[in-house]
Length: 377
Image (cartoon, rainbow, N blue to C red; front, side, top):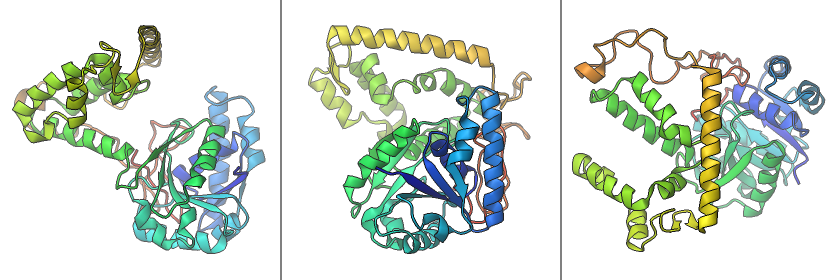
């Protein structure tokens, strides 16, 4: 069991990870290159957690829990000297991470597990900087860490796979969920996320829709479902034969890149059509199980729609009516000054960008000397 943790990198990503663990009773020590930066990060986290507590977004007593379980160290070496697990959360650059990981592994105990919060860099690229690479793996959180519960866990060729279980247990104590993926660039989260962004930009460039309308369609249609069901579950509910037919239309229009996936064709050929046949990607389901899942889906979607109405729009897009000379009608690029599909990266004193864990709609700044990851996920 992992009893105590060091987080290296006191920017918004590292701070959010430290915050997530400490408010759930895990002893965490945080460090950055400059002790003054670490001290400021500590003060910021205390203030942000109190704000979240006042807003009812974290449980009562969270600020006190954070103050009791989060401490700071004057150096990276001091922070990692006697902990069970270290999470590196520095700038997404191989050279920067190599330098920090080398420092961590030289100062940590031989049995200390070392994780990296990289968004895209594989284990086999980073582990060369780590003494005893069998104790190294990727533990990739998403931003803002206190609120996004999923975490990717990536074990490399040399990783001792027995380390995965205690890392998952640590995440569960912080009400997060670990999913294991293979050691490949981008892992799963960002490979899917960047594929969506690439197709979204192509849609805008082709004049099919504006960035604003693409965002609206994603967040209010299939993206609406994704908080509850992944793509395989959604396909099973819709009918895999329907999906196969739709892929035929796509392949006719867009070519090989939209060809029917072999996995999907095999399911249909075997008569496994999803819920309509009782079997599909998600396994076999009895009629009673399907009825229960559909009832859950109805409840989940209804409550989520109600929440969206209660919260109202995020404000990321202007409230004024969209222009009539948009790409959807003219085929041209968006008008000068119109918002981009994603928020403008925040300015920082390091080479990284980051978002605040306390106010996710507000760009943040960080003065981490190590540099935060500036999470892409």
